[in-house]
Image 1 (cartoon, rainbow, N blue to C red):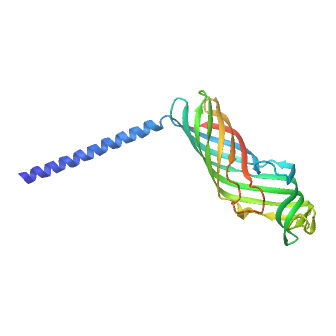
Image 2: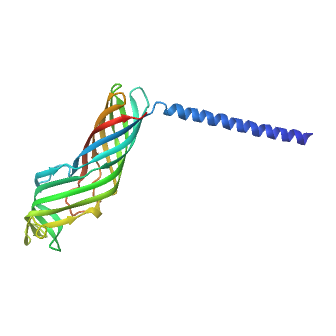
Length: 262
């Protein structure tokens, strides 16, 4: 009889334990469900305009001759979770391009290049054309302040992983002083054989970090517009890359539209 009672008690305890687990699981699911009930999910399409540039224009860069707009498309989705009546948190995932093409006038600008199959290095004076190409995935994590039901402001860090990268260009219509400003003078022309070409793509970072600020404006039910500025805190090249004297930071503004999914 005692053995039977022990077995029955054991079965009761097991059943009670299972019931408690089920109750705990249901409470956990209900809690998680209630936590995400007020999460807002949006899809975004935007356009990046900007470039990679030093902070502060150095004396060696005299003027910008031209700047060519690039097809810098931004595609992404994000979620916003309110924490209080006005404050919340914003997390997103984006696929974007940050390409740039510019031509600038420089003087005594340190460069390594290839001219007519020969590698040369020194101080260049003349015009240089640079093309930067970057495809990347970006994750922004931002604090959100709701001004009203339609307008929200955002600020916070971002991290990007660069999938495809390129930094190429050429020096033209000028001259290079080998080694230093008083070195031997080499004239550079504008055609393929007489200009100096360079490719620093392999020296570019895969990971980039920065900070962004932005604003969202819902103009009609599920549709809205947005604008933001993203400022890189790390240069696009590795820190041990010294061919270009200045650190070049990715600085881009974005404008676009949003569509509310949830």
